Amino acid sequence: MSMNKMFVMLPMIYLTRKLDGEDPDVIKYCRMAYATVQVIILTGVAYVYVAANQPSKRGKTVIYVPPPKNPLQEAMADPNAEPPKQKYTRKTYEEHIRSLISALLSSTIMGVIFTAGLHWYKGMIVGMAMQAVMGPLNFFENPLVKIFIFGSTKKLGEEDMSIRVFDEKHEGELEASDEIVDKEGNVLALGKAENAAAKNRTKAITAGAQKKEVPKKMAWETVLLDLWDSGQAADASKLIKMLNKSNVNNAESENGWTALMIIAGLPKCKNMQAALKALKEAGADASAVDGDGWNALHWACHHNNIDAARSLLAPALFDGVRSGLYKAKDKENNTPEDCARTEKNTSVGAVVREAAEAFEKRK
Image 1 (cartoon, rainbow, N blue to C red):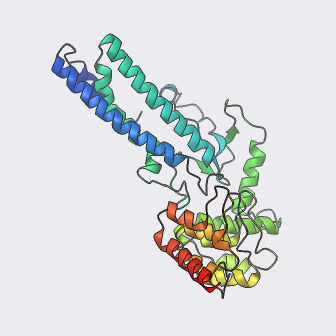
Image 2: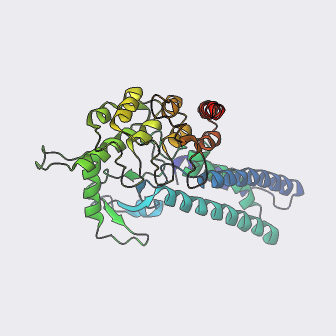
Image 3: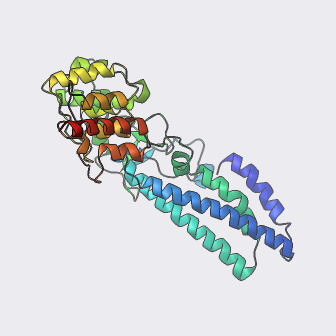
């Protein structure tokens, strides 16, 4: 429990003990306050539940999540003892988000049942009074609320990988002292190997350390993922330099992302137009799809990349209208325009719609 919450909770404990549980007015106002707060919280939980179950481009991204902190255990720990190794559980964003939303939903409902039950059968009002104040504090501290209501990183890490509401680490960030454990807390034998593989992928260890050449496929994936992780600070210069006909359609192994998809998903990318031209000249396949069935135009529409959408549809470049790129449906049966509509990206949706209508008139 944080010190800020302690400053609220301790006075609340003192004040609620002074409430007159026999006074009808006190009971009425406690009920009103508790009911109002719980309706707001339950509405927020319902919104978070729906938002958390929407598909995400980072849903399959692997993260390493530490176990929940135990304040009592930390307080009783020997300050002179050697710090224990930090343990992490390997999950995907989707797995972790859905486990947290299930926990949030069940704990909220059980809290209401427990508090209301004590009041109904035992006449207790202290719990209601406490929850009328502490309920919102606990709710606002929940990481899912920070993501989906306050927008700390509402794309689950897509825009700014430096925002870590779960205290998670990404592949390549594990230290030698970190341990990977299963759900029961048992150390996994493959922890060290997985950690080494992650470091090799993201840091691309070169001849400077052990004089070992990085495989070309690994180096290309590193460029793609580093470019994507750069977000609004992305620069396509390195990608353009390494791009050639043999790797232009090589997909990232975990999610099936290609260079064209990633460029289409980065509307603020520096040298984007040069990259799109280079990709076209190298033979980039605009109709290729990732693990979710998205082609490059789906990416452009989802991320509101108007320039990329125009290039993908333009006859002089990828000619996505003639090839039917705008009509392609993903695994959720959504077209690129559907993605734009879902994200309320009206401008890029209009670009796709106008290009499709003009093509249909020419037929």
